[in-house]
Length: 538
Image (cartoon, rainbow, N blue to C red; front, side, top):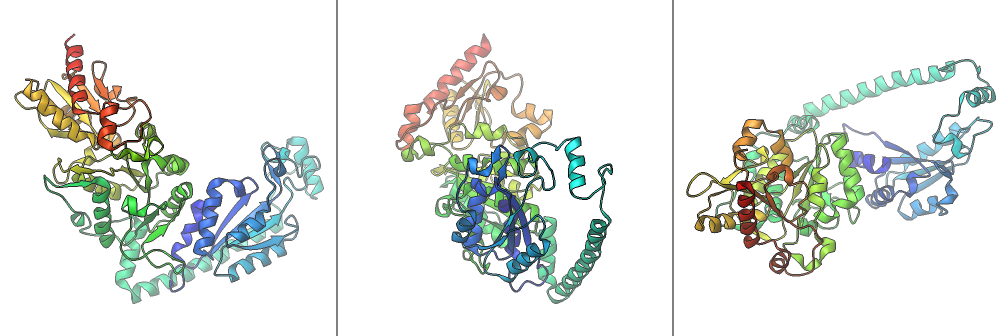
């Protein structure tokens, strides 16, 4: 993960910039160089020619379980060279510090390629019994072996927490050098402010995570009667936002045309031009790289792919949630509404499994207006990630302009013909199904309220008074409808409620045929409503 989450900090360190000039270093070991996410990131780093990325490979040939040869036998150096990296070697990393320093200097001199420095070391160096073994990897050396190691290194075996004078002096000098470097950077920054006040103001806003004035007003809205896929509405929102927020930046996993996440202005290439990063089929690295950009600051990162492929990037999503990183995920093709690709491409359990992740806000908008509101929510959140789960198929506009997605759930249409006897709750494309079912129920003398619940997490953050106003406890007859597993909906509908969902994998068929065969229909919602009313009455 070290490479993946740090290398795009170099994105803004390209020729012509005068206020940042640092290199980024990553330290990896034998286990790290074979991880899938590391290989995805390294491949992209080589392709982009990130010359300020320097990776020091601690080539000690040991992993946690034993020798690295138990699980790997490839030539790591050759593999990185094949990916476009400059590869350098240090044969005695235990003692030859000057050789490491020369290798780093050579890495800095090559501005066209990232550099891998293969440093052969001995794990547990100095330990008489455990040096070069897995015993020095995952557990303490032990009191006796620590003392023996100190003797072997010429240190007092009885001295605890010893910092040799030479080491203390060396690291003390770093403080002085760092202060001088920081002062020089501050001087360059002030000169930049004087020469480019407008750009400097944008820089400051980006670094603080502030949004420019008027950004929200630029987000489009739609009228009743219009019809478009929420992925298409999302793309239009992104174009408007990118024009107002220059530091909105990200890309897609080889699916920009499908996810509608190509921002006008050209693609990112080795010169650093453009607004789009083509991650390629590297979902895990894409998520991790966006984390790195969020850690770095000065950019609002987004990552896009099909919703079902969120599985591939889940570890990075979890780290974004764990570390409160403001990353936006654009996940399209949210269900089986256009089902010809079959069950491998139809997410079923994904909504509920991601809702189970703490600090991740999962938003499944029902139409274009909810999508616009969802983007506003995502842009305003600074303490964690937001996932926008979007449709491929066209959906009619049925919600108000500036739909209150930030409340998580709200009443879309009040009951007709009297107080609500039952509440129909839906997300995404199934909201239109619930609205149609409301009409059928009304014709039969049953008054139903329809609630849109685009974001569970936001709804449960509201106070009890608001939650009860949307889902009155006195109305025990409830139906939830969503094209996914029914697991978890009991918290919303209660013991007398019913759920119309999909507790099986999908199939390959046109969307309308698929929904009919799988029981995701208006008729199924009406039947569930009648069953819930009967259960509540009993």
